[in-house]
Image 1 (cartoon, rainbow, N blue to C red):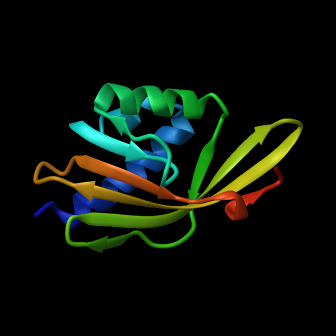
Image 2 (spheres, rainbow, N blue to C red):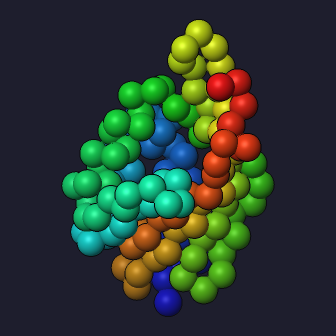
Length: 124
């Protein structure tokens, strides 16, 4: 089983990487064969390089994240609510999201799934 403390630390590192605007820091949290589905139902990004490219594009918006509650650890999953704060098209925007991270034995994220939709978007 992955280490719960390292799992929670990875979530905080994820938020910090957005603050730094570093897709490389985010990608470093992921396993080489990881997947990202953001939001649920969107095309899945396969592999660390595709994950890095996805985050690099996302960070062009200047997105910043704030945790909106505690990280929940259950088995090999970390689940966490957060808000994405953006500034574009003339104003502040917010998206309320719940992400799930699944971890391997090396405490790397193997799967990320983001749960949000139009009803979670404010200011658009």
